[in-house]
Every structure is written in C-alpha cells, then in structure tokens.
Length: 492
Image (cartoon, rainbow, N blue to C red; front, side, top):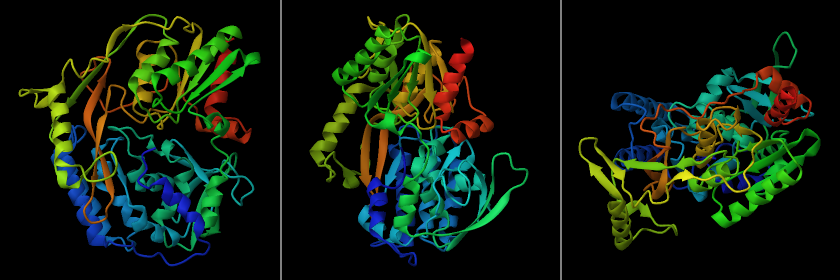
C-alpha cells in the first residue's frame, strides 16, 4: 500500500492516552515542508522516467501552485501534509515517507475520528458493529464535507497510475486516520449517514477520541472478512461442496522455488479433489517480480503465452547524488553512483527521435515468448478478484488473464496500469530539511508488447452494485468472494 505514513508511526500512536493540542513537528517548520515539496518536484522532473506522461507542464504547474497555496493557508501544519505534490505525477510507485522521529509527536495530538470505516468505490462505509451508527451504513458527510470531497482530500495516500480512481481501496484500516488528518483539531464530528433501507439520512454528533482509542477502534473493523486468508503470503482454501478452491496471493516478491512449491501444492489438491472452479484473490497484492505473475498464470494457461516486457525511461543519470541513499539507508558513495549508471548504460539504448532510452536485449533477457503451461495446469473455470490494491506485477497477472481470455475479473479497477507501469529499479532520496525519504522508480515497464498506455488499469468483467455489497456485508460474507460464488452457482 502506497501510503505517505510509515507503519511504525501508526504503531507508536498506542503510547498516548489523552487528547492534546496538535503539536508542531519536531525539527522542521511549514517553510521547511514547503521547500522540500518544491525540491522533490524539481528532482522528479529530472529523475522520473516519464514525469509528464499523464499531464502537461501547464496543468502540472497550476495544480502545484494550488497545492502550495493551500499549504500556506491551512492553519494546521499537520493537515498540510496532505498537500504533497507526489500525487500529481500519477504514479503509484512513487513513495514519500516522513521521518518518524520528526512527526510522531504531532500524531500524538490528533483528535481522532472514533469509528472504523472502509470504502466502496467513492463511498465511505461504517466498518464496526455496536456503534451509534449501524455497521454498513453509508456516511454522506463529516463536518459538512461530503464523502466524495473527503476522499479527494486524501489523494496523497490514494493516488494511482494515470487516471485510475480506485486508490481508496488501499486505505484499509487507515481510512479513519486519514479522515482525522483532514480535521486534526476537531473536538467532535458531525456525521450525516444513511442506513440501508432508510428513506432519509440521519445526523449524529460524535466525540473525538485520543490516539490510543482511535487506533484501537480502527483495528475493530469488520472488513476485510478474509483476514484469515491473509495470514501468509500465499494461502489456500478448498470448498469441496461448491467444487471451488480459493487461492489468496498477497505478493509476487517470493523467489521462484518458494512460489512454485506453493502453487504446485495448491493445484495438486485442486486436481485431487476434482475441483471445477478456482478463485484467485489478488485484491491486496502489491506486486513484485512479474516473472512470478507469469509462473502463476502458467498454472491456469491453456496454451503457450508471451511473458514479454519492454522498458523505457527519459534518463539513466543519477541526479542529486548528494541526497541519494543506498540500500542500507546511508549516503550513496561516488563509486556506487557510477556503478549504477554503468549498469543502466549497458542495458538502455537512446532513441533521439523518440527522446527515450529503450531497454536492449541484455535487459529483457528474462522475457520469454511461448511460455508453456505448467504440466499440472488447471483447465477449469478461473475467477480473479481485483481492486485498487492490485498493483504492479499483480496487475500484470490480471492482464495476462484478461488478454488471453482465460478467466473472469471480479471487483474494481486495478491500481496500476494494464499496459504499463513504472518499476524495475528504485532510487531513494533524503529530502534536505524534513529528512523525509522519496522513492523514485527508474523505468517504465510495458507488458505484452504494448506500445501505448491510456492510463487505465484492468477493468473488471463483473462488479458489485452498492446494494449487493451492503447485503453481503450485513450477512457477514466477504462481498467479492460471495458474489463470485453466486456467479458460479448461477452458472450451474
């Protein structure tokens, strides 16, 4: 999940127990924050593989000026964090992490929104039972700000590739924290909500809670219902009566031996149990090695397929080496910078007409045309669950399924591009004044010989209505899984 806040910050909130005035950050000022924002933008204009892929300079500069004006006018420096310009590049792989030591004291003083919440597309949903607002009720507004506006205000945490708008799927249990950051000094929250089946909305005033209570309340969220299936990187469930097996894959970061063992064990059981349907859940898969995506697809492929990537980037030079960090988190030495640049020079060739460096054969040596199906490949029906949390190599897997017409995609649009995304190698810079860390991908990656990117992810073949979503969660059922099971039953 590409959030702007480190997980350690969220954990550290447990150590406070009383509401307090929002404190200033330790070690930097509003001007320092603004200066680092501007520094990050200028750096990204030089270092990003394609900074204006989904915008133009005039539009970008206008949006940047708007963010900086809002930062200047916002009375709360903490709230001003949401004006990070990283979101303007429309790249899910860009990441900005604040130095924990410099921001943790400010988080202690947040007046937290008291309820666990989640989202369904552009809606905010109450995600807790036993509260004054019923579980599953739709929140229409908070402190007179509409739900749609609230979600747009947390764009610094939900940006995706191109024009994809499903990034809120990745907020998970942190959504109420992000809501709190929009109103960090609010002692109470006026909430307008509508319960399922109600004719009219209702309004309630909720008292803000301290950091410890806020964290605890968020952890009590009912969704996701498949928490048990997230206990490992790859987990399996077999529903013999439904003739269906569920494979949950949370990452493609595993090495080939580990991934192959997990997959071969699963599909061996599918064959042994004579199962007809396989559901592959990658809703929360943040990606990894695309070759592991291809490995998974080989277990459901009915014929050979192409596992081919093309790379391109605007530059292969390491800019601002003074602030560049190595893999150990220390300053990258001159020799390391040269070594990285030489690595890239050997693998990219410049096309002056196009203005891009393109990956040569040495870089694409891992690509395989006519990738064969696994000897134990599954030949039944395949359903793939996707969401805005399906990113990078996980989107590539969904694209393999879609483009080869091998299954049904269920859920919401993936969080990264169907045709391409940025990835490959990553540089990390430390911003001079706030000591925040900016992670920048070095190259675009185009999948399956694609030459154009329209800025959209894989679209689902089947998607829940809001009414169906409400019915499933009120019945205590995982919405996408139960919806898919219902599709399978209807097919029978």
